[in-house]
Length: 409
Image (cartoon, rainbow, N blue to C red; front, top):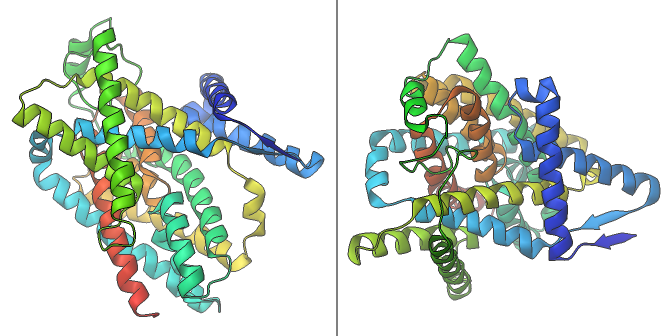
């Protein structure tokens, strides 16, 4: 029996998942010790409960995909609306270096997947599915490329395998990021040089005077009714732009996932209003809506997981996915952390890289929030990761996948 939740019940369920996650993190030392994000903690428990219900009573739950997608698009739009050209310039050489680190990892990820698939005697394209298509790409990329692999390359069940692989990556990306960063901070005795300044600025009220996107999810933001309404209008414009561009560029060389257009729409709208029309953008409201959408999206994504699908994965595919997790940990430790400076910011960047290297950018941001909530802010990480993980990486990933597929045409 399949229980179908409409948008209202899906939203209620997501809020309950977030409250449960908050309770679990507050009560369970292990979750606090290893900085597991609250949506991941509550979502995994919900996924386990739904799996038990499916195996024992045959019940399954289908949530509102449209609502989940909407919150995802709002989150990416909030990243775009927060990314003015001044911040891109401020990222400077660090943004370029991190982009090179991440791009290299995409190549490594696909090399590992294809090589292991060949060694295990299965189609090498299965290894590509267990590579950057599902892990760096996430569920949206897995669905898009799965259809192509089924129709053009005769890979039976590519979409289902991609969904299962992306699910595995989403969970693991949320689990390993926090513990890795914590290990790096403790091992190298890293200090956050900006924490004293932040404490002086926030004082007892913890009011943010200067906006830093997604960095202080629990801090107080002073928002007026007018600013909230204006911000909702900006989000609506970004989502409308994304919907239009998705349809307009379909089957063209410029075809991109809808969330990329939402982010791009935010960047265009922000800089047009601020730099051309000289209209001030209320960043605090964007930050609040973005953080709320992030938490709700993760809760819905994990609530809708069908963990029993993972049991249907072939043994070879399971070996590849587990190997990819090990490779991600090693790469973040030996490459990302060291290349980015081997300091506190580098440890937070490593947690973020684990998030979108295996799962999705919202997972990366949640990983970083779990660390910065405990050890203090990291302006560099919250400047670089959302822009790199949500925008540039998808473009690079698509190019790399298309290049690899040319060899199998």
